[in-house]
Length: 53
Image 1 (cartoon, rainbow, N blue to C red):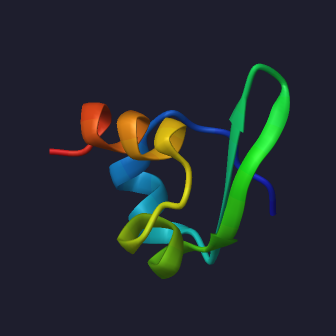
Image 2: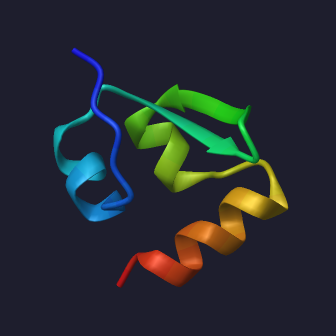
Image 3: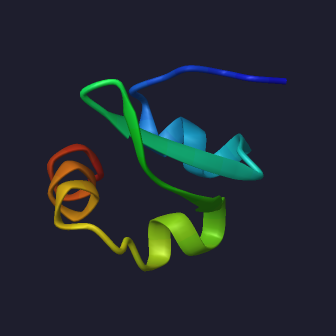
């Protein structure tokens, strides 16, 4: 199933894989645990720090 959301806390709980898109392009993707634990791009790091509490 594909689910599109901006609710990263929800995505972290339910997703097996996560894709981060910015300006219509895929910037980063991977298993949810790895995706949230060690983001590789500055854009994803900034996004996650602004939405995860």
